[in-house]
Length: 416
Image 1 (cartoon, helix red, strand yellow):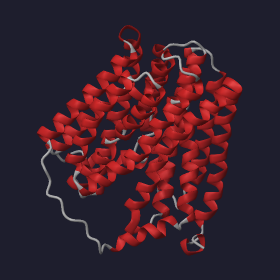
Image 2 (cartoon, one colour):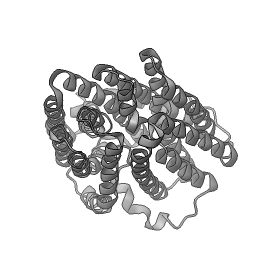
Image 3 (cartoon, one colour):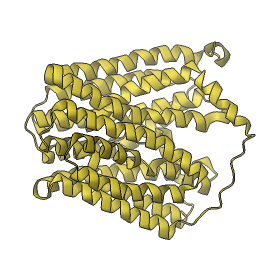
Image 4 (spheres, helix red, strand yellow):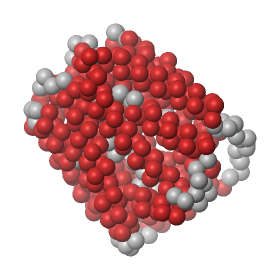
């Protein structure tokens, strides 16, 4: 799934940057990121694990929402810690926590235990992403070098997603999902050892309390364009996150197995690998135009709402896999379009701040998607889940058109 991908425009810049040799710690982070994603069975197969515990739909959605809440907090916390105590210490601590929290989630039987373990597991699920970003920024001062690294990282994550979906679906039956979660924990522990052995300890500088960029926080939070972009992106990404929330819940309701769900993951990842080169080149060409990509942002939200909403009308593994694959163009475009708008509204001195604030939309989507899915399935079944997803996608499209009006206005006017 592409909801963790970097802005699409970065993919086409790697020709010159690719000639620069990667430092050993960057190569290790690339390998480690692939490792934990390839063994990242926990969140994709968590709904099936909860279904095997004979929990009702409302409880399942609450546990998934707890995972999303931990993801939201962990994304902010890990990024903040990487800037202050360094990527090495942050990543070792996060992966050590993962190796303890994930087995607790695998073995928990009570609802309070599941909620606590899911929250703890969520805090470290996406920990490598902000830490890897900080390490890339420290190792490569040139934007084109960073773009090349990010493109390779996204490729590694997408291939790993295909591995996790296919292998998890094949192994869930004979081994059981708890065993897959234990394997996820072991991969995290191995990653911690790799970081401890290969990543050098960096000398951290004390933060500059007189940094004038600190004033950017107030300006960012008063910028209506940023808030509208956040809500628009949240709608689109909530539809995209349905692949990991409402889809497995719907498939479980239809009596389909974790192996069937694994094929939907494979179909999605395969479409990502096939379509990414084509769509990324197209988005790069459009990024040179003076017109912001708000129309594409609207279109991607509508496509995601329609394709993931269509899953509510599916009843076979083939139908769900088709919905997962058809959602991919929307997944790819939403990141490229959102990045284009973000670049246009971000002040030069606050680009990192704006990007960091926008990055929380993914965690919020992971929190919101299972909550909406659980409510819809409980009160109206598959059809209400389809209508709800489609409505959220259309809402994102409508907000994108409103955003277009604000982005085209001068900044002092849009800020009131």
